[in-house]
Length: 114
Image (cartoon, helix red, strand yellow):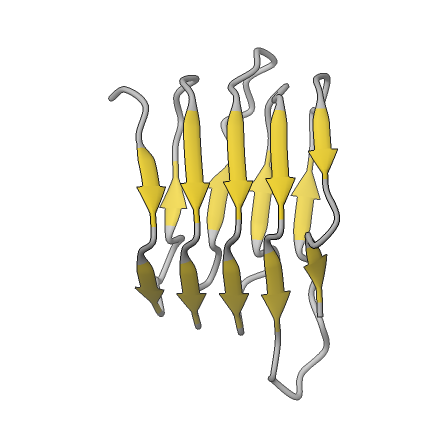
């Protein structure tokens, strides 16, 4: 499978993840909304090589898994204005998990967890 781009989608209660990949191509995830999904973006490839990814303008509402976004290769990553909101009464889980990172990561103003 090659690269893909997800723009302006609505994801509802995905059991595994809304978006994910195991290959190393260029990806853009822009202006999407995720509601009640286990994970919004799972990029846990484990590769030591990089893959350019842009996460821009996304809204993650009430994610149910351990991580809302998992980034697990050398990047580079551009994360701008991607926000996680949780209205659940349970304990908060972290928004981003970044492992095996060896590249460029830009977390711009507006990329937050609320």
